[in-house]
Image 1 (spheres, helix red, strand yellow):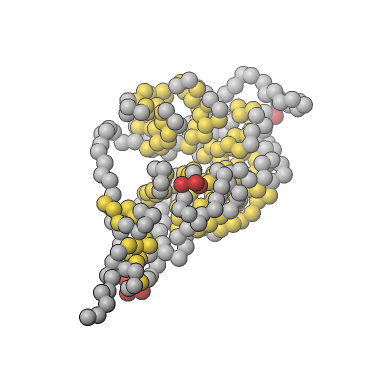
Image 2 (cartoon, one colour):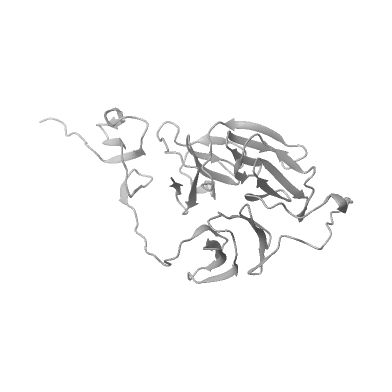
Length: 307
């Protein structure tokens, strides 16, 4: 009697870069790659599980959702809302431009936000203007108020080492140190050769996505930083999400403030140390989209594309 042939016992996951007859298959172990994987999850042991379903909790159209611990923020229609754990919502600003995706950044007790046309600050569950009457105060530094202004209304907002960064088109502006309401727009900026579509601050600097590829801004001081092109892949805007590197499978030795996002080259990772990695270079082709979304559910990254 011949030895039994294992047709399938487990999978190493999806491979869209090979045709079906060329997929890796081990008849001894029954371990194989998949040519399709629709509405399923794959656990660490290669077992295929039916993906959990969902239920609607609100019939309105929402976008720009982001969590901040005990609450989240989101936009529906022309209004910005606080979303609580029990799914109740409270409107904190109306009259926003329709269909403009919102970028958020939490710094201490404040959340700065912008959508390219409007901006503001959430503090104590209230939306305030991103304007301050308090003069900047940094020990040992004297400021000439003639050259200072409030924050530019940008497309993306982020934070790194005592400064708020605002991306507007192909320019990255940064605030005074520890004075997040004050900017010197005439000199405190970094120009790029193409539109900025992603900001991912890390322990060693910041990954910056542009229409021409990925740049790593090494260092914390923008006056002394080094810009390095690390990849020619174009990030899918809004798909970047911070993850806990300890939740990655064994073998991934990343640490610090780590990010995952989608690009036209695959699913990418930027570690806290400034290391870049394309996690799916040999296995996955992504049908590129200009915009998308992403979230990390505690064990896996989920990316969505907006065609």
